[in-house]
Amino acid sequence: MRPMEPFNQDTDPNTNFDYAAHVHRTATAFPRIVLTASGWRRWLTGHPWVFRDDLQLIEASSGDCAVIFDPRGREVGRALVSGRSKIALRVVTRQPGPWDDRLFLLDRLHRAAARR
Image (cartoon, rainbow, N blue to C red):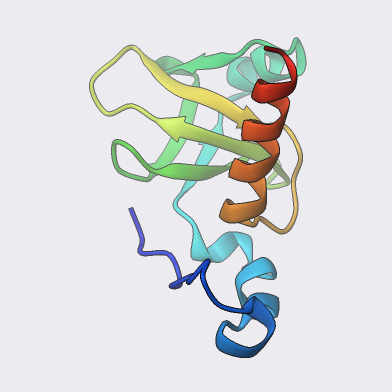
């Protein structure tokens, strides 16, 4: 997994952290996966994972949060990569675009807490 930019939660992020650069990382900064046509069909049904046989290109390691591309090269979301399982991808989000690890985690934690 590629290292994240440092974040110090005890300080003001506007003065000690280049937050704009963190938020606007491009998809090229992440490991990437390209789906096959059958993988793309599975993705479109909303299936929460993708099998290894449904991957056309894997430029990611086990444990990575990879950017997922359809067979035409369009970014379609992100998923966690498993290097050993037949279930190679576990979908994290189906939203393409800029990615902020910190905001994503905070959102998921807030939603989980709201369900309790």
